[in-house]
Image 1: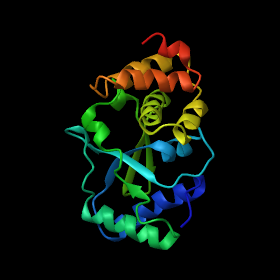
Image 2: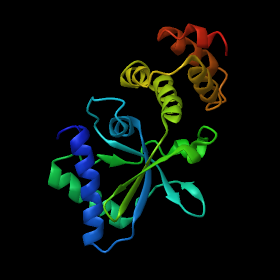
Image 3: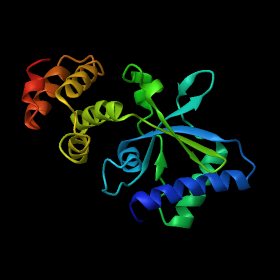
Length: 196
């Protein structure tokens, strides 16, 4: 099973739209984040193992929990996995809990829209919001690709401070502020940790 590079990602999303169209399904609209969003926006060149679906988009309610995927979308994703040799979970709603926990203020207004054929609309978070999400993922999951992705986004001091303050609000536990500060210091953001 191959990881997704930029062209494979674009091809996979286009093919999902085509399968949906062939099946006479409704248009699907999702927000993606993580490595796939960074790859699609050109911030990174590394491959990613999956497409993280953060939310569905509903004209009435705005961002909604994408789980479960509609039967049509689930089938289209499975068809694309088989056709392109992708892992069965290449398109998943792993980070969807984040919508319930809360997103950075103004997140919805900053989304960038991409159309894939007639049946798939994908929204991508703004760079500002990706900084927030990547910092949270880095704090939550420790050293690794999230921190290198964060560096690739080249955040300013003000952006990092805003992101760190938002991350602090994601967990009410007593030990979490210390975890956030320690992670920032470990990754050369001591000046941010000192302002929290």
